[in-house]
View (spheres, rainbow, N blue to C red):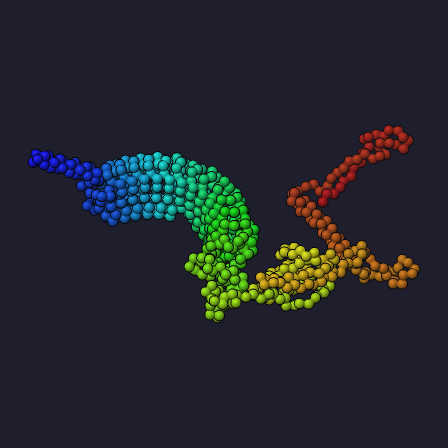
Length: 611
């Protein structure tokens, strides 16, 4: 019995020893005891933190084999020499940001065969030499933002075929070579800041056909040329921002793209680029904020059936026309904060009930019946914490946030238009004269004035008959066919008012001369029964005499000028003979009076004086 008991004790001790050995084999191996004095080495997470360590070079005694994360940020490291990291074969994350790095030597990262993330942001790098990233076969993210990079050379990123993200914002790129991105077959996101580059590096981008996101900041270009992104069929997100000289997009600038998100912010676009956008049928997000765009026209965005978000913040929007968002059935977010809008009517939307988020703050809104739909939908519509406010005109009412006013529906009223001069007007004018009709109206909101022709067609701002900005109608060089009744129509959201005016244009008589004038000279009548003693001339005699005088003066002037030129030419030829002798044979010497042949030697001469 006792022997059996001792046997069980020995068996239990052996099991405990085996379990202890198994537990020790599963525990993480300790880091190398050679941890630099300016670093903190975590033995449980395999991380080495040398941030703010006052280092001027990369430490030589870094723990090897097990380190997965090394933080060398916020130091004074100026240069990376070759193979300093060769022993860190398991390193995944290397942070060298916020140093004084000015140069990276070739093979500086050799040996980091497991490195995935490399951060070199906020340094003093001006160039990335070819071969600087040799050995980084697993690298996926490279951050070189906020440096002083001047450009990318051909094959700068050779050997990093798995690279997926390049962040190069806040740099001073001057050039991007055609082969700069050669070999980056896995690149998906590219962030470029090129304040001295005047055009999109189209040829360089053709090497990254798998790109899905492209961010272009601070380019020095006044236009986006055609086919700028040719070959980027997989691109889904395009961001163009801080191009102060960008004023227009070529009609073919976005050809070949199937974008779902497009951002063109802080540029100088004065109109929405309707034509370049029309083929982007998969577009969901459109941001045109901080551009001096003044109008959104009607029925121009209907080719974007999947559009859900439209941002136009901080622009100069004065008006959004009715049906501006026709056929945009999925539009659920509109942000037009910080513009110059006086109203936003429900009729601009295809369906206002689909709208869920609306940014309308910081606009000088005129609170009238056009905004009643917002009051009725305030419980189901999100304003992002910034409710729209009335302009100062209603400040005296004691309320500016009309959505919180219980009497909003009673206060938001409109007054139909009324034309001030409401009586029939008859106007008679001679052919060729200019006629001006005045039409002014009052109402709340201020009505718009339209002029209709006798055929009930609206006049535009150009043409011989045109509607002026002040509401008047101008008929220039009136013709008999312009006669008829014209109609002034004043309209606002509350109704309309009309005022007809009639124009009679007297034409010229049927005389052959359209400027039929009576002669100031009297001529006797050709018919005995004509008692007038004078006849009407088809033309004005004074005009004929004046025209003849002018013609004669011109003729004599031209002849005199020719003689003067001939005289000057003669004087400029130097000394010449002043006489010329001409010999000739008289007729009597050739045939005598008797008819016989004469002698040809009987000749005569005469002398002529030359001027």
